[in-house]
Length: 468
Image 1 (cartoon, rainbow, N blue to C red):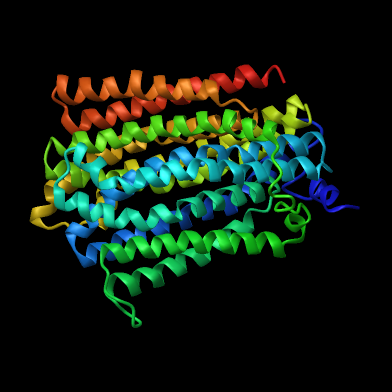
Image 2 (cartoon, rainbow, N blue to C red; image 1 turned 90 degrees about the vertical axis):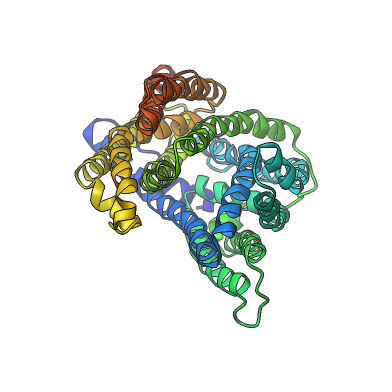
């Protein structure tokens, strides 16, 4: 029996046959086996950013602030570049669902994923070289813009490697081998910790480079992750069997176009959502330092809880894609709805914790001293709103990525734009400024945007899945 046949019959790669309760339980089990390593991988990626933040905070407040500004510019470029790479996973899942032994098309999809990285990286790298000018146009102080540029320039050179890692990650995920990525990310976290410690503070004989050292360490970490992931593909028999670098120079224009056709709307969708929350950061600044600090605390908590439904949603892309490729409508619905229900249950539990212990959670970030009481009080209010939108947040991401499994990206893009910018942002503005609710109003607006997105995306999945 070939490797591909083995993949189709083994745990996370096989489709669940039959119907009834047993089929739903089996599908949920397959989903969770695939999602577990994906969740841990997402948390490991957060650990890299956390390491940079903690060490730069100990170096200087200016370096920390500049890294946040520079990181925002880099993230904007990364979102654009990662779109075509995100298409790799659902495209491969469709192929394997229809033809489990089709290595040639899987190889072509992955190869064109790398081609898309090569094509999109050059203009994005050039854009990142002008980080200082971009931040000055946005009204940032000269010293912060200069320091942010020093942080981003090393990252610019690593951008192609970061995007290349995403191609390999999505290739491995589509083949239900997410543990390979988890191992690489765990090693990358350690690599980044050592690099930050050495290059920011000048330990182990390295020069003391401050914010430049942090950018350099992060850039080296992305290069390391790409090389390590390439090695993992080579040493994993099921992944090596696809020989993804074979005839690398040969174009497959249809697959390249499909990567962009599916991937770019995904990137725009993420920009719509990220743009709303970035705007909320800027608006909070107009209310004062206490609001900004409380907002930062309250945003960090749901960012962590969000990693679980995000991992489940990434698994749903593969599970739905396999079923759709096999033209099994019942399996499509089981895969999508199992992911949504899993996200709802987990986020409901998170909501209970956030609503019950907001003050204790806020106090983990700031000691309850007299000067911090105002910040903690605001954070408590924001965390209670976060508790209210936990379920919506988990539902909207699982529905959106389940739709990816159906190769549906354009409609979710427009839904995201309408939900966040025609519903969420006006609500933020109306409540925050019009009714004078300030930060509380901004958070209600964010929750409203997520609610609209969750309802619309779930309805979209229901509409498409019933016709499968």
